[in-house]
Length: 108
Image 1 (tube, rainbow, N blue to C red):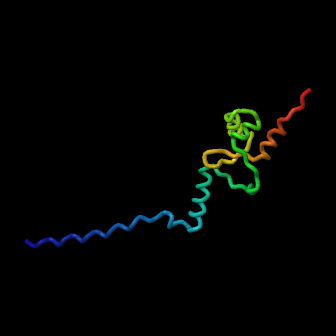
Image 2 (image 1 turned 135 degrees about the vertical axis):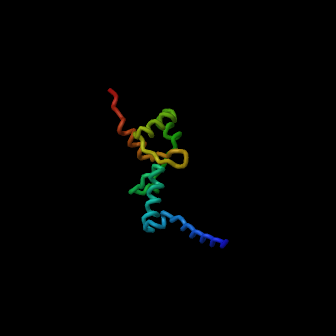
Image 3 (image 1 turned 90 degrees about the horizontal axis):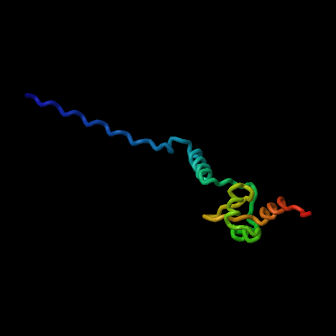
């Protein structure tokens, strides 16, 4: 009885295409950069604050004669603008002065 010829080996499957290689090169790099800062809640600034004087939450609490928790509440409510540095916040002296000036009332 004649032997049957062996079936040819199937062609190897093509390697899966890298989705980034299918995109235009400038798109995926800039898009990933935009997504990374957007996910972290970072807002790009149009004004440079390199010369600004910053205070810690504890220093602001001492100036205002309130607890640290009160300063954190003011930051989270948006009444006091702050910059996040690592796990802590920094507040500009000008912003604290503006906050105090807006709430200053004359007695009597």
